[in-house]
Length: 350
Image (cartoon, rainbow, N blue to C red):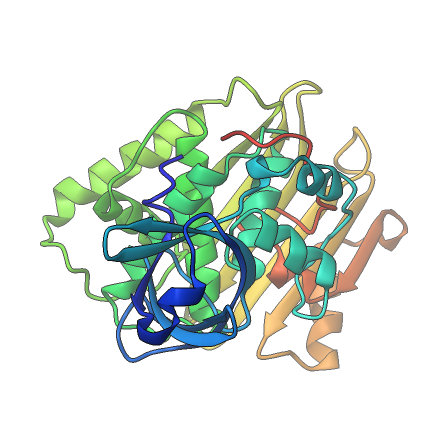
């Protein structure tokens, strides 16, 4: 890991130079953002500073760091998991499923991994767990940075739930390619995400040659659907769809998770929207015979009326004996390729 590249540069430390010594350790807290992109107000060594960072930081983020002096420039080198055996042992014992700001376990986990302390980081860790792959923090940061660059061109508020979902989806989509040995440019990643209805199809910064770009995007989707990860027994297939029902246009995507070892469909995710309402479905198959028993979780935003819920239940199956249906927000909160799995980090791949 390039330690200086991943450091935080101190922009203004005027009167505190005498207490900041090369090699000393400090505890850093991010207090606020500034009007300048990638600049933040931070507190450490008993003083507030303006700092710049190439990586996203959020108010409330905390981490330990080592001071590194280079001429007149001061860097904070965040302490990473690979720097401390004690931290590794601590993380191995964690059992964390979902992100909340009040969950100190997950806050400490992400802080020690030098990742932003938010739901997106948890989703990206869960991606590796879902696929039973070695955790790769540098790749997580790279995919997240690429996704952030794509959304930053649209001047979106980064703190809204919708933008957070799009950032998570883009990052996971890029991880799906990267862990199979492929790399998509930001332009190609954005086009594929739009094709799969993972982000809004607004005006792109890139010039459009519709026929050519559609074929290229379809080729990229075919590639990721056909190439399996040699280190994982799980494989995802993604398909976009567009359908007209009662004169209303619905668009979305279907994701199938295949267990390659057992050669069976493990679960299906469906997302669809008509522009006014978003629908989310998670379908788990609990028996070898897919017709015998299913567990279905579904959610709609804005939330639907109780009468609509009954109608949806009737659409799923005529035989309720073999069907477990639940109206749950979990159908929405799951990641693109993940679910709220307990987090157990067994190895850090530097």
